[in-house]
Image (cartoon, rainbow, N blue to C red; front, side, top):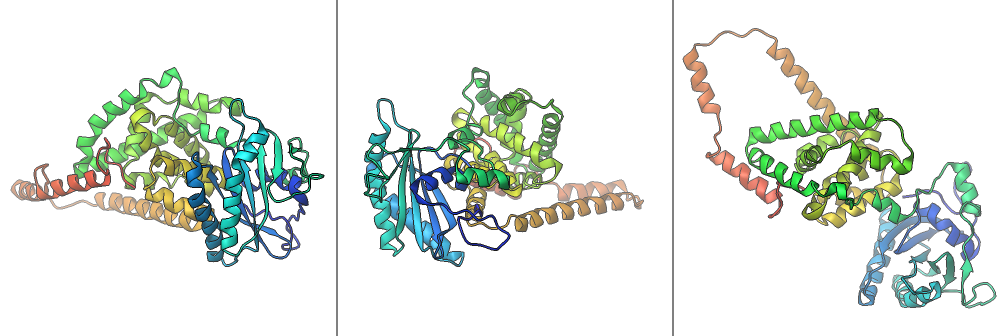
Length: 435
């Protein structure tokens, strides 16, 4: 969670006092790390002076029929989540953010969303947590659903401050906090490409799947595919890292141009194997992290057409690297998209929950470092053993042992491996996807 509090805290923390709806509305992008589009945002307040605590965001359901159940679930999630972290909220602040549709005025958006605001207030009240303020932000203006005074909250709303001119903006700049853009812009960096150049990507994925699936159904073939996937991924990371520096607005376009359709397909399908993905997750810090994040973003953009569900793996890796390197807003966006691609993707579920609960990623980093160290140690030990001369056995003995230790595609072990791979793919995917 974002830990930049509104009021009281230790003496060495930055303290900001926000007064009234105007400053709350201006503070929202800094609380989230981006400008939320089409979103319900709820923020818990703690203590007598309303210290910011946990927060959550969800896209506004299109159907008003979903609003009652959504309101109850969001209120319970925020309150229960805060309690699990040891502090029940004293109050809650609600934001409804939605741009006007074609032909719609911002004031009409506010009125259309008023029933949702009321449902949220009622749901919080049912849990005995009052809503201190509920704001609608639309078309550069804001309205309060709680303040009846037209002198401060007129019917046509109030204009938001110019970006970068609010109290919160000044404090955030001083603290080195940056707003990464809008939620829509952040999601676009991770969403399937829609350019003509990507038209051949589904065919490349089809071809790669046809070549890889028979191999991963065999134990030795699966290990070889995993090795090839990681080697290729490292080569692509090196290629991205060595590319000339370009403007941030053109960086994704450049990365896309540096990876061929066949290369993207091979790594995307290789990452559907859980063990391969977990090894790739070790590139989470230091010099590897930046190029790994660029690669995972680029691969997420290549999961087009019928392969949208395959984006769960690179999106989860992008979310993990973002969280590991301190970019919590970016992590939540990437992990949210991973769960949108595959709601049952276990790794994304666990990371999303841990990130939203404000846990320290160092615990997982230590586990991954340990796994990498153990694997490196085993590899070194095998190399040392292979360097020791062995006694030469008679050819007949060597042949007999080789035959007894071999596994052919028709054996029970191979058939069991095939069943496990198909089960992990949950039926219908082309490459044995795993959670």
